[in-house]
Length: 191
Length: 291
Image (cartoon, rainbow over all chains, first blue to last red; front, top):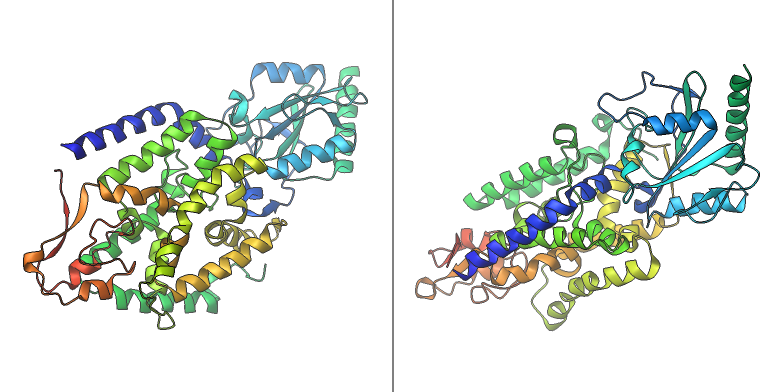
């Protein structure tokens, strides 16, 4: 009888945990963190430098970009930064960007540095806590595993274009990409 | 890395395979051991079958890295670390529930019947370089190391605010870091934790080749989670003294070197059933006892 009670209690605890934490566990498992097993991904990008959305790289069944993001990316260039607490490479990338004057603040409520804030807005997404975490899948090439940190620079003219990379990218390269995005977006806006 | 990615022409792969074959031939002779081999192979497949089942949110009740390219479930230690990092009480409850439900029914049986690392140790532990460690005070004391490691993980994670154990986990090195480097070589660069991880992995390999089930005995924190449930689990090793011939075959074959045949409720027992197979009478049995 004691054993049946023990199993029943265990089952009860398991059910509560399963009900509340299964999705979080799945999310954590899906967004692999190579940085945690002593490996840093070299920057992986889509084959095209600027990906048109939706393109044939877009995986079947993966979520679509929400309307508010498409609307916002019409107003200015949007930078997305996917991270989570405990991800060392995310911290390293963010600190690097702060040091080189691209962003200010912490990952939780980071903002673009004054040079950029007029034309670019940043959305930092904690893949564990934010509901937007599943967007990470969109920005991962078809055969790759979604991993953090992933940084995306995105703008919409008549089409949505983005440049996404996971891993630590040199900040001079990021600056170059942002400049290019702003120029493209301006050219389209003028036309 | 050095590997060209083609296993078919790789001498290391062939030597590893032949070692596995020798190990399997030597260890899985008796009826229950044959069943155990099938179980271990099935679980090895399920563990690495993300290409069929996809990546799920379930938690392994044994030690395997969830960063492994085809891992289906989550690593219990990884979940523990995230529960501390995110201060997520439900994640902790989910982990405790999973371990409790497996523990109350099967005790530490996942170590013997499901764990791929246990399978690896069974196989390499039977190669002749392996030496028997007799039961001694030092051995008994060293077994508490795994509980100390398990207890230290939450504090270390909280203190360093990072995945402190995963950073240096040798099993992660074996099942995730090395496969990823081999299959996607050129796609990754090692970080500063790579060297300590590989040194620990080398030490672990040295340990498990020289001591039977060395990882399970001294170091495995998941084993430490499951161990207390051995006292109350439904699946029990039972001993009938009236049938015992005092031949001590059971104590000789036990890979965990527990005090057989008397200490059948030992926290170290992994329910592998080797003693049951070896027993000339039916004094030792592995059975489900609901009472």
